[in-house]
Length: 321
Image 1 (spheres, one colour):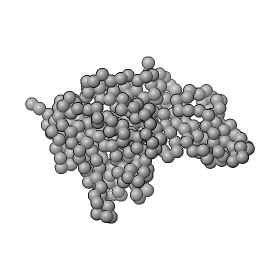
Image 2 (image 1 turned 30 degrees about the horizontal axis):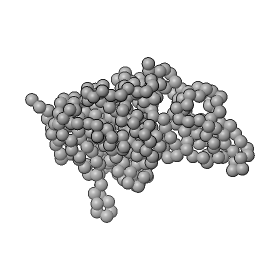
Image 3 (image 1 turned 180 degrees about the vertical axis):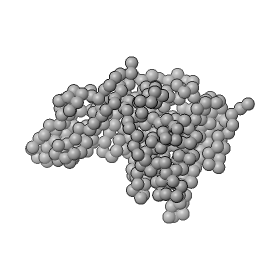
Image 4 (image 1 turned 90 degrees about the horizontal axis):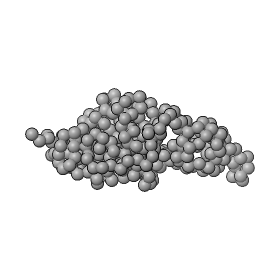
């Protein structure tokens, strides 16, 4: 007996096929409809159902390209299980390059949402009902916030053995234990019984091949581990570093910041990471590492104020060898 068709919204997708689905969100003042775009890749053979999502913050475009390239590698006639691909969750923010929705709400603080709440709450509810409720695992793709950059890293609950195992399989340069944030997709999905891996890499409104390639390869490794695809998947270039704690080194004063480190640098406590000074180069103040670790994030803003995060350093617990 073959697999059943996959139901989403008012649509059913036959085994061994793929289909684009538009889930209605709202109507613009001009009368045009806004929908959540989802592509269902419903495998011919039985297997797990997972989702991959991106652009829950509208300016975080890197993940959209990861989803696009991932889909290009999949053949539903050979796939075991089902992939729900949601390249743009915050459709309205994505169209304007804005992190937030038009009402300035952060969609990733609106989960699990409500069918009668704010626009953010309604989108969150739609995503939970039509995507999360059907899946046992989700991979959510993010980048750094505006004027920051992140090293490819996998975040999740590393105290959960299955999450820990899949984080190692993903093979990002760093896996970071991350607490759940109230209102986030990861918190709501976890409470609903799904496991979530959060991939962070790159910069807002930018594509870069390291972030994209690491994301596509990592998702494919997870899918291969789950038995969804059979293709030989390239292994990571280096072992994954594990971190249980990370902190931003912050500016102690206002000035122009000259960065003297890069993403992925291994630093020792006391190492010089940069220097702040005024517009004439006077009043220089050195910025030094206050712990040993690896640089997983940094600012791209040359002008900083006291308290601004400059360099994000993760302390290394162990190496996945």
